[in-house]
Length: 263
Length: 244
Ligand code: SF4
Ligand code: SF4
Ligand code: FES
Ligand code: FES
Image (cartoon, rainbow over all chains, first blue to last red; front, side, top):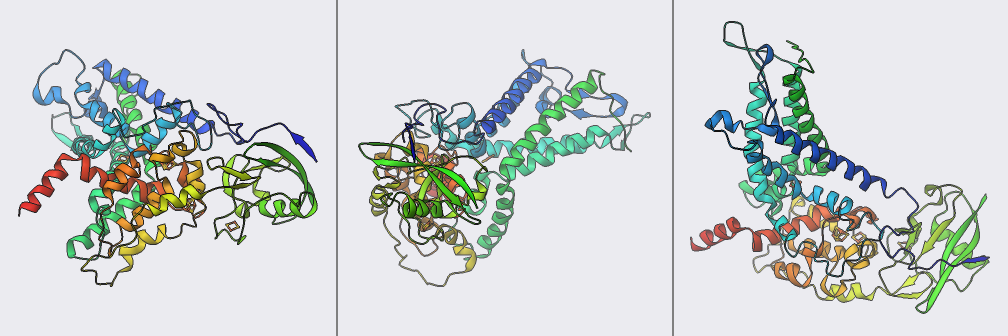
């Protein structure tokens, strides 16, 4: 029998833990993933150009610039108009319950991982005080995100129509169309798996079987719950999809990539 | 049969240390078996709490290789082979001795929650879909691993202002019960400190009963608190409905 001088309190202090697994890997990957996306999104929104590809009759609009306010209202703000809408998806994701977990862990180390020490914070208030109390408004971002979804579905469907040599529109399919559909489908799955949506659809009820309406809401709630179970996965896939859709259209518009017409 | 080194915390309130023991590992052995073997062969005074050895009584919670777990549900062959296994008491509760902690704070919190109170018009006929959610919460074995790992308790030591995940689960099971008539929203928001939870999900990660503590109990309760206290449209809707 040997004795070692470790103490039970050995894991007090940031990053201190008795865990032996690679607990730091997940927060690190999330940090890299979110930072990369954040930097790219701000850069792309800042550009104010190459967000629309109209080569070979296609009409692909980057999701960062949807709806195309400039085309709709015909005005030219002194800054990239992407910023007029980008705060909606940004606020939606920033107040999403999954992303909260992700950035509280990866950026604020509060906690970095389970049973791992965190920085000393004598006045921890969680989500009870400003600014984090504003997370309670997440459902309002959900409502706004639904409006954006309508616009993104319009863009994806619009990308099915190509202008022919005679100026008329004809049905078609390009890789860009698929990219835009992938984007909007994953965003729809992410948005409808939202915890606020789950609550509003049926979670707030105590009796599902009490009336015709509650029975319908129960069915919808079950559907939303299926999406909600994989909300984290949808969060990442849709984040990648939206970034890639912008990149694809941008590179096509710059002439670096060439869109392939499939049909 | 192979030999494995166990580093077991020995001590009490005044201090202690990890002590190394050799354990003869057999097939199918769990950490609690190893602790029993140590008691039988090397340290009869080693204190540990257990009852069922079937992951149902919730008494054998400890931290194995730094992770909160039930000792009777942690198989040795699920731990990295050949490595030393460390076992220490749950860190968030006062130590009594060795692997035994004083979990009475949890029972004190429990007493602050008004129990099931039937609605005056309760019919006592319930459909399965109305109680599915509550039944998930009834799986809780009160091991308090979630209370132990929650950083609000563990790191910020806010026991005075916070009920903890196990009791959010209990309140959710009462609030969602189709026959319960009591409102515990003010309790949740203020005394229970639901807002202190930052949904980082460690409670869900450690729950041996695999209850979706955060997604099915805490977040739905947060959303109900939003309905009541933070959502101006919900407030307006209530006013209109009450005026009708
Ligand atoms: S999700 Fe909330 S209650 Fe659960 S461990 Fe994290 S802070 Fe604690
Ligand atoms: S909710 Fe899970 S982890 Fe928490 S006390 Fe109950 S069984 Fe244990
Ligand atoms: S979008 Fe993730 S919880 Fe609402
Ligand atoms: S001994 Fe009962 S849960 Fe482990």
